[in-house]
Length: 215
Ligand SMILES: [Zn+2]
Image (cartoon, rainbow, N blue to C red):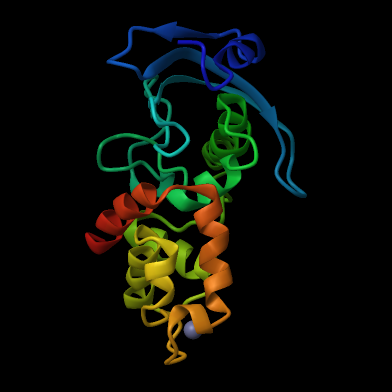
């Protein structure tokens, strides 16, 4: 029950409480108050009524956050997923952030609050969504992976996830995704993939492979 630093989170965010959960997931709900500033941007203090589900397999399965106060407009400009959860970034980018500190507080401070800051900024001032790194929707996710892997197209990204879902020895004998014409083990691109192997098991990449193929 008290995993992933949930007690630290409740202490830092006293408006939030533990709600009824399904199975081994943790449900957190209530008012999340924050004060934040993006680089070169003004301080914003605001609050949102949220439901946050922390999956049992966190961080290898990422939290699902819903805004339940009706404050965030439900349109594409605000990065809301089709299932009404908040679109905080690609799973791999979020996992990379969490890999050095896989706690709920890190998730909230470094993945969720930057998103909420961008929402508040847009509600208050209009203009574009300054969250920046990820454009909306599946095309945004693919673009994000192109950048994270340093690859050029979706076919290469799919191949990279496929190799990450294999064991390292087998993957190194396959064709490299970077179009060098060599096998992975003979190209320096294998170092890029090895960094990602360190932060998640092959099962995580197998799941991402399914998602990316459906993009
Ligand atoms: Zn290569």
